[in-house]
Image 1 (cartoon, helix red, strand yellow):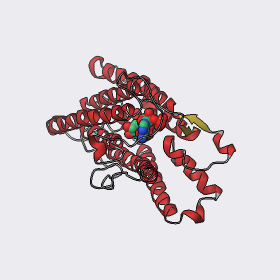
Image 2 (image 1 turned 30 degrees about the vertical axis):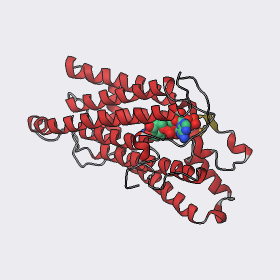
Image 3 (image 1 turned 135 degrees about the vertical axis):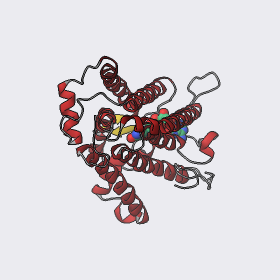
Length: 315
Ligand SMILES: NC(=O)c1ccc[n+]([C@@H]2O[C@H](COP(=O)([O-])OP(=O)(O)OC[C@H]3O[C@@H](n4cnc5c(N)ncnc54)[C@H](OP(=O)(O)O)[C@@H]3O)[C@@H](O)[C@H]2O)c1
């Protein structure tokens, strides 16, 4: 399964494009924020805000009735992870079959991967162990998030746009395929495996630490709404306290970024495709974190001034 380290396929263009879109949205939001009165009433501005916001940050914009037709409950977030567990679990089984029973991927999957990478028949060989590791971690991450959505998080009546919902459903399908596309091994396999040992370990440690941080942050948010017995007492949005919330408004977004960095490291750290995914997550979470941070600052007078949006001491 070889692919030139720096060859650019459709999948790279796709992730690069998505990263660019979120960077552009982040910059556009910042520019609009400089001149609030000039744009806030225009239809394009409201549509833009409707498409970039979800949950609590969506509640602050005044939308026409017709725009609310596209609202989908934010509590449906678990659908994304359910799709991810099923799809990425299925791809993991195919990879295990390929590694241990020498069964090649089905021809339809090979055709899809060839199209995405632009390298014909590049997936006829045995997958690399690092690809197996990335797929396993992706499944673990999705399963944890699914369980958190179903049993830890307390959702209010927040909404997301139908486009965001459909995007979220497709996202984890494409991500699973991306993990297979980035399975590159253009160098001697022994040399690469020796090189990978350190990266595997670093990536694994980072994955565990970031997952722990994300879970703790999600649990802290849930505790803002539950009493000691675990029963729901309020659905209000409160000022988060404790843990990494003392440093940033959205430590769970920072953890998400670290999780994707860890996946890239575990995958060998040399896949352009995986780093483009990291770039996409950086800009995606930067935008969501910025919107959340702005909301907290505008809503709570006593909101701690030293807190950053999502990267400690930086952003
Ligand atoms: N990889 C990606 O592209 C991507 C994209 C988006 C999200 N994510 C990840 O998905 C996870 C969830 O993201 P999210 O944007 O849904 O996080 P979020 O808005 O912080 O919501 C997480 C949970 O906490 C509740 N909550 C939020 N702020 C609260 C407050 N001030 N007081 C009380 N409860 C509060 C939310 O309830 P309500 O919102 O229902 O009120 C929800 O149940 C994050 O870890 C994020 O990194 C990943």
